[in-house]
Amino acid sequence: MNDLESALSVLESFSEHRSVKEDEMDVVGELVTNISGAVEVHKMIEDGMSEKDAANAFSKRVLGSIDR
Image (cartoon, rainbow, N blue to C red; front, side):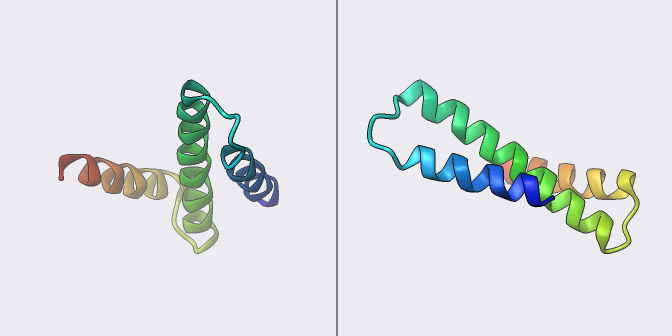
C-alpha cells in the first residue's frame, strides 16, 4: 500500500505543474480516483472486512455519490 500512496503523491505533484494539459489532467484525475479507491478498499480489508464485502461497500459508496 505504501507504493500506492507514493504514486498518489507523485500524481498530485505532477498535476500541480502548470504545463500539464487538460487531457493529461483528465488522465491524472482518473488515476488518482482509482488509486484512492484501491487504498480505501485495502484499508477495509486490513480492518477485517472480506475482499468481496470491501469491494461491494466501496462500489455502493461510489454509485451513491453518482446518484446525487
